[in-house]
Length: 332
Image (cartoon, rainbow, N blue to C red; front, top):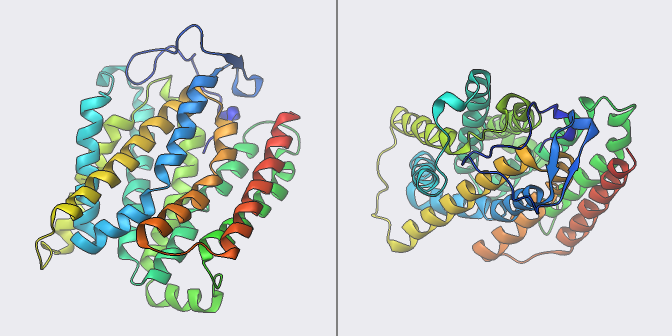
């Protein structure tokens, strides 16, 4: 979700919690990033985000079924924001560059609100799969955008084949047993365009956030600060929508899934924020192709669905596309 060519200013001297990687952490210096020191430990932490995010779609869908789209999203981000404030307190506000607070904060809030609401507003299970696929365009957008700003000769053309292969794999993996019915998908979009539009705009916003905001942040991660702002935005949306409490009182299991979704999303972004600031953004961008595959697998387990042959074929294509882009980046 970002790129070594982001031109991050400053070194990796300050994480959002005000700590730095131990001296024993292996590091390399990326010339493409303007001398930014890349920590292998930070890259590993960033990769943990992809594992945590794999549970996002399934848990958000379950919460939306129990609480409704807007209330469920507001509850998830409220709990997630509280957990981040407890376990990963943000740096003092004066340490945040003003440009990062404004631009990064708006992009983060918009993405989080749009993807959470788009999943909840999908009218059917088939629509939720299609909306997820639109959202999962962000790895491709990010890889292409990262290549475009890397200042390397023909960088976009070099990563394009891997991006196409991986995107086709995502479509197969997310599409399910019968694959995606494009005619039916067009019908769903015409009937209920809002979740699809939100997912697409959110994916684009996230790719911009991941590629450009590390250069604005100067090593300070705003995840724990932005997350509660997302919760506030979602509560405003919920009350403005006129939706009240669910008809039946949700039980303990429903609240457990609120906690699980909050941990998966909040923990994922905490890991990702640290990874893109101090790790190899290029490696994280390539690895992010695994997110939809892992998410589909996790959703199948949570929702009691079987993994089909198209899923495994798609997973292989995603892996092949990622390897192609990795080889291109290794030759830089």
